[in-house]
Image (cartoon, rainbow, N blue to C red):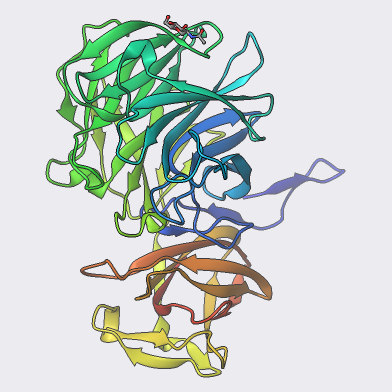
Length: 449
Ligand SMILES: *[C@@H]1O[C@H](CO)[C@@H](O)[C@H](O)[C@H]1NC(C)=O
């Protein structure tokens, strides 16, 4: 509810504005300014002046290094591509062709003012097993790549980075000859100084968060690109003693088919689990599994939500408002768009032949009570290897929306989200072609605002 004070000091209600922007784990997340699925895999997050930066791997062309990308958001839900922080070089070298550059993580050194990025740097056969360091004066600008090395001479594969409240920082490093270590960085963050703690236990993709004066480290088992039941351990001091590693998501869920990449603190007593759902044969179509982490003393649990919402200013997360589903086949189909049969779809039908030469379209009338910015979810199928695209227009305001391949799905449909402004009353939502054929639309889910 928005209220304004009039000159007379009388409160005037000017209508209800609701926000129903949601995080939808596992969906296609289209960046607002590229029209493409976000390419920030294995990412880390860093906040500055109320803006969140997600820094991760471009995987459009598969596993070999392409770029480290930076996306920004003020609400952790709507993301725009800012640019490439590191790019593949033409000449051979750490950043050259057919190299492994993974899990970029950035922290700021408050003494030098520098932003320092640590990376897993490897050869395609994973024999290098090194870390790399890059620096920049600008968080989301170009980085200067400095060097790679084995920290204290140890092999290092998947990494994480952790900056403590006192400014000391730590590399989290998985060594296939030993296990996982926490290694203290030098004061300038450009090198390592000493081992703080080591486990003769393999926690791949380690991520560390401090929660109410206790340290929680998360990691996965070693199953390649396949998911497993990720585990965590906790301690009052980074030097230990650390608790036994134990699962935090339901055992057998394989961490909702994801691998932890980062844990983002939220407010004073909450945190967000961020995982990658890798698609090994189509890595650029890997999605992001973000869910609220629940802490109860030293117990950590992760429950599934089809959609949930976060308020970064309040430092809290919430259940989403209920949604109403409209069937694709019940939309108004025109310009070549037709109802098709679809065994995986609700009602066994979908809106098909969208886009293409005839620019097939489907139009939905969506009636809501209030004005508001909401996350629409399209349930869809795309049997191609590559993404399909559609233009989504809401009351004449158009934006591009990507639809990742669902060719690898054994069951069900995919989700793609788009964030739009709705007005109280009837809204006209038109899904039409963008490039080539669009997806087959099973359902449109609209928050009940
Ligand atoms: C980094 O630290 C190691 C171990 O202390 C040392 O051998 C190496 O020379 C250092 N590297 C640089 C560039 O200072």
